[in-house]
Length: 357
Image 1 (cartoon, rainbow, N blue to C red):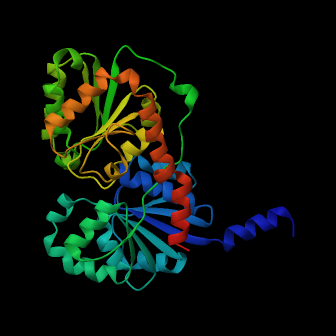
Image 2 (tube, rainbow, N blue to C red; image 1 turned 90 degrees about the vertical axis):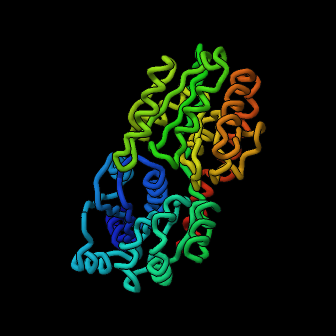
């Protein structure tokens, strides 16, 4: 048997895995699902299914995963999936109907990411989630996601913190700026807390605020323009505040080299992928105590954690960073250590393959 025959045989001997994503817009949940897909591809043939298309499709395809778009899971499509795939991974609680559709027909792994605000609108869904939990192995992206799922549905889950492949290149990070560049990339909505950052910027000392450039990146959730209009008004009030659409992930990663501070002012967030990226890129990371990543940060040692929803506390943290910016080199390196110990691709790979053995 020659090398070509062996390669062909290995392809057909591999098991087939389907990843279900509720959407393919640029965002934390599809991003970390793509990272999982890259890991699974080492042992399986991986296909992605989503009811709607989006920019993340390019990332999946770039990493060798076929992407299928289907707005409805018909019985015929379900039967094909059951026949062709060995197991499926459903991403986020929005995959509930998908999980129920495949109940007891195929092995299902279900990865939960959601926060309290998401569940508050689904109080009447408890019975359906409990039914679905009987047919799926459920794990949560951090302790906040696990606690929320148990609180609302009384379902215990295992923890699977996500990890990101290390894309940091030190020689690209040598630029220094006249200003301290602060970035807040996230979907624009109440949950993500952009309004908290807006108010914190306004409360900063005038001279200290002038030493910064603030960049908001994001698209409104469900066409909610209220948050966007609030940020737009801030850009009109201060010329050092910019607002733009959320970039494709590769462009965002390149932009990090020009940034100094990454902020996640979320009221609640299981694990903001942008903070993990910031830690990876040796940036000064600031997040609220309502984020899952905050449990791994010691305020002032490897990052900054402000009291959830506390505008004054966030404003004080920003002013401290400006006043002590040149002294925070060690903090950056300690933050990078958090990425390496908790959120690295290698640790994620080990945990994924262990859970799905």
